[in-house]
Image 1 (cartoon, helix red, strand yellow):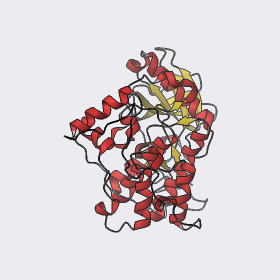
Image 2 (image 1 turned 30 degrees about the vertical axis):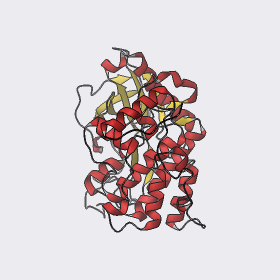
Image 3 (image 1 turned 135 degrees about the vertical axis):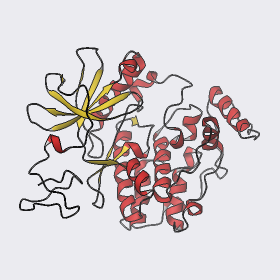
Image 4 (image 1 turned 90 degrees about the vertical axis):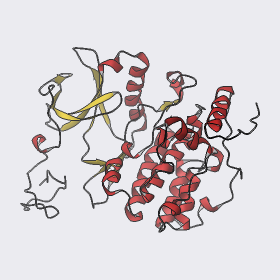
Length: 362
């Protein structure tokens, strides 16, 4: 039995949802799922998927609810906007999302089931598993922050998915709450899926990102992204660290300002202690958050696996001292840009904050 309001499932014999009182249905019928009307309703893609409704949109694509005609199962279809589809680099990134997910094949990564192009305009689309629940971003916008007993398992699962991506040679580069999906209903233990590998960097496809182009979401960008240096797995460690900061405190390390000032602070300004934003945060938790968002990559966790180990220690699931409490590899923790473009960008951002830039060596 299925509750269309909270998406919980129950054994046969229940008539009403014990959680919210809604009348239960016998199955996850398509008409019970949450979606908005669309003029594309009834459109069939690839002779297999019939569009039923509109779910939402991002910067480059719209997402629709559809059913697979052969099975009646719901799927999510992500269609590249027509204006974006005309740009070759955008099309390459979109196709890369399917390649990335297929290469990883991990339970904490959203499954891409199929791909194709629309017959009328040639716009590419991805067919993905339909997820029941909400993003961590939606959860935080409603509840503001999350307690440790719920947050640490969520963060561990997200880190596990990202660790699998790194083992496959893929760096996400856009880790943020909106790309971490909580499968299930509020109050239950969540299964976590990492979404949107459209900005992912595959080592075999480095040409897709132009030199000197910063990609990502500003509030979650690591310093190396700010100045367009090459990312590595520690870039995603930083992004997940900012997610962790927000999840526990309810706020970001740096408040929204003009774009250039915010980028400058991401690069230059030491982050505030989480306990300054929420007094109940203890020293061990604070040390883990701060290690993840150090300016210099060598001061962060060297891998997602190392990050997970400290998260498990916080939860009491692993013995030993926190690696976050070890001395920093580089005590000054000032990011050192690589290459002339990055150095010039760093100098600009220092000046943007009215500061004199350090003398960066060639």
